[in-house]
Length: 262
Image 1 (cartoon, rainbow, N blue to C red):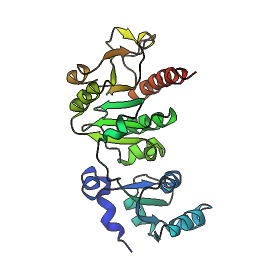
Image 2 (image 1 turned 60 degrees about the vertical axis):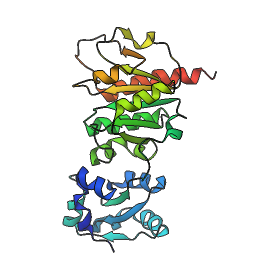
Image 3 (image 1 turned 135 degrees about the horizontal axis):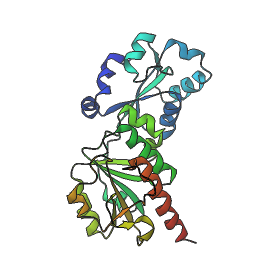
Image 4 (image 1 turned 90 degrees about the horizontal axis):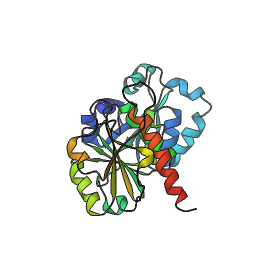
């Protein structure tokens, strides 16, 4: 049996990166994790979870994987959990050991997302979930973007983290130049752009570049872009949440891409 104490520090990014492990908590997310095929290091439950209708399902699935579902006291389980009212089950998962940017992967994408400095893990998780909704399977972030394996990111993604390929890039500017080299158009978003979304000339493959609501996209990355556009504003609010903007952009461009096959 693996000691639960060895996983307490996984709440911190430093230790997640060192150990290549992260925590998934809650019934729905743990079900998504089990379905994903990602490697499970350990599984824990609190005493009350034995009375949950899903307990036999989790126990059986974990037994099939030779992972014991270890019982912790309520107090100790809470030390591993990130939520105030945990649902009684959590998994210790292995972070996939892959190269951050596999050329064979990104060159095959018709549409991908590039994220520059999205520091709020809730926004990041929602963006991943939104990408999953629209069938976008590849997302690349700058190193100062929130951690994909932050508990808040995972919860906000609602399991989409297991279906969208998410890669952190140490130098997003170099990657942008690489996309330019391979004739992949980069479309950046800015509230000060003169071209609105509906006026852009759509071509694929396409990388949509988004920045944080507070600071926007770095000038160096904007210089790598083929075009800079804005979502037209009709009201008085100063800025648009980046996750909401992602949904609007993907709805537009995925629709255009699908229509190209009609």
